[in-house]
Image 1 (cartoon, rainbow, N blue to C red):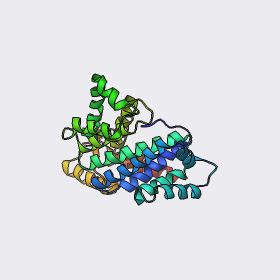
Image 2 (cartoon, rainbow, N blue to C red):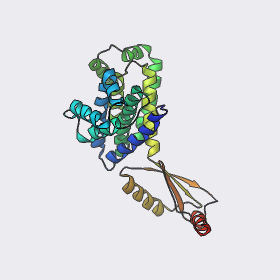
Image 3 (cartoon, helix red, strand yellow):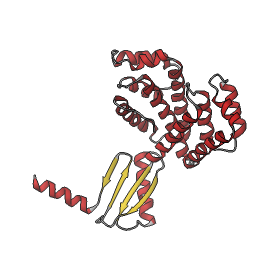
Length: 275
């Protein structure tokens, strides 16, 4: 998860909610396409200080900034990515670099959602983590891929020759994006951003289910189907047995809590009577 403070933290939370809605019920291929367009925006932001400043200038109104980004990106990205960008420029950011960093996080998470859709998100997370060891053990490779002046095509060819057919497609795409846009950063630091971003998306797709006793396979399957229908993406159910739960289940997903336990309903009834 990227480290944001002040206005940027709340703006990123808002923007992430917009991304969630855009990815809801999207196919893995659609998620990958959205990710690619978000990365193209990231590349543009990282290569232009002026663009970052114009997009985050608090003295400019949202409408004029929307016109600016529409003129710049309206013909190169589709509506979904453009909508996210227009929403982004309407928000307040503590710095222009926070703005670019937030878009990088969203682009990674969109590809992670594609991996979740095809059942490879755990593999992608493990493979990115393993690539950290590969760089650590091979300083020549680290130097070549981490060179700020290196050819993007050349770096992409190296990643492809090393990993094509050996890692998940999402892993290959993410590593290619990474080496092609270090934006003046050390490659190890950027790779850690990618690892954490994939982990953050996976964590947002984990459903914590608390109950007094274990759910039957049929109950777990029904709950899983209900959550997938609500979220629009495959989810991971984690079960926790809690003796304090009296009847029903408590379900926590991302920032939402659905508490259907009897004890909670009794507490709510008691508060209502006390009013």
